[in-house]
Length: 298
Image (cartoon, rainbow, N blue to C red; front, top):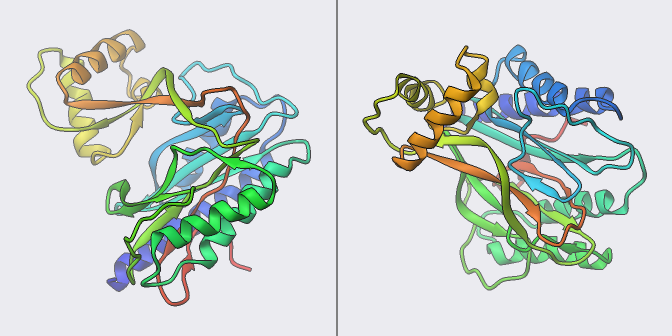
């Protein structure tokens, strides 16, 4: 890996770790999740990075792709499992991390953090992905819990937040191996027993797919913004509201762009049986001594 690229990853990871520390000092019951998301996104910019995607805040059975609406009034309640997933990029090189907050002691949080650490311990050049998956899964089952089966860890690249390889959190027979210099995000999701996510509303997050001719002026602005300002990375409706586009016109334009296959949407993912879910995630540079770039320095 080129030295400059590694420096950008490390800077993005350092910003992510600092934001996590600040969030855990700030978050509390009664706080609006909109306030929390905007705090994280502003701090990302203040510290010299850019958001790699809208902050995801999943409460209880919501596991992914929920970012607050521009007028979101949802508040954090005591006892809620609050999953906070944020990404920072520097020149497109992404640090992706997630953690779970709860006012009460919750054994699933302890289990998911332990499983993540066990997965990290298994990482080295030449290791099979199946071995990393086994380490994660064994740690979860030994704690008496299960995983969300159809959510996985993933690779990262420049302006790419979900690329190869796919790293399941369940045992598998994958013969794919990790290579020196790979950058991956391990991302276990733990619940009472093995579960699955289903797609649900609302649709607040979108990303660029391809340029397409569109008639609506707002659609042209959004498409240009998605491709050239956000560089194809995910964005959300409330970011567009801040640019002065009315919510009605945003919704109308996004429908047109998705129908034309110029953009794709990200449905909210919920555990299909309603089980609460805890999440943890770190970004790792694969090496003989792996570098966990999102972990706060000791």
